[in-house]
Amino acid sequence: MTERLYQRDMTLGRFPARLIECRWSAVVLDRTAFFPGSVGVPGDTGKLAVAGREIPVVETTEQAGTILHRVEGMPPDQGSEVEGRLDGSRRHRLMPYHTAMHQLTGVMFQHFGVRVTGNQITPEKARVGFAFAVFDGAIMEDGLRRANDLIAQILPVRISFVPIAESKARPEWFKLETEFPPSSCLGRQKLNGEKRTRFPVYRNPVRK
Image (cartoon, rainbow, N blue to C red; front, side, top):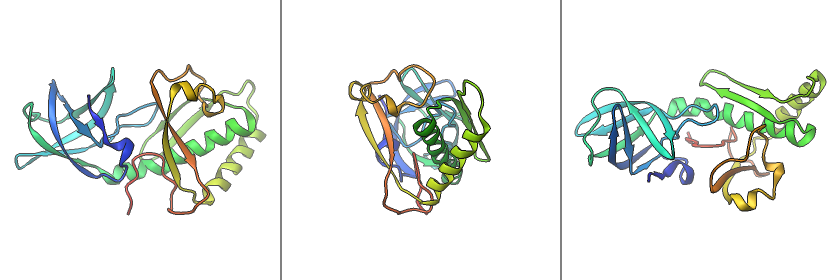
């Protein structure tokens, strides 16, 4: 089981770890700050430093609860001590899109009852789909205006973890037009009134 450092310390750009398993061109670490891609959000990239060389990490994914770091070239040997080095510039380009998407989808659900059908984020742009029974341009424009007003307040984001049993009693938290998340603990982000950062950040922020 990999310790998910990115969930608790979102400022990590480098971290020590041990390689516990090799799967063809992917490796499993005992701990990682690399975020695995999920629900339209790409995983982190970067490098693993070991024995005087740097091995590119070109993709981070999760399969059946295991976080896989797909590497370019020959992976280190099992048991190797490595240093993970994230591509902070790429991650920082994703952060504002990710947070803005959460703000827009939150506004659309809370004010208009419109859920999310899917999304896709890249370092250059992002898109999101909404489950309108009949598309209403006026509601969409109002939602965009409300979301931009929220973003202009430069609110920080606080992240907490809530047991699924407790979360099921809070249907207002779930904006997706899908089934309930099949995990035992749900990460939840909350905008707060205190102004701290230029961009509100949702996951894995790298402070300048």
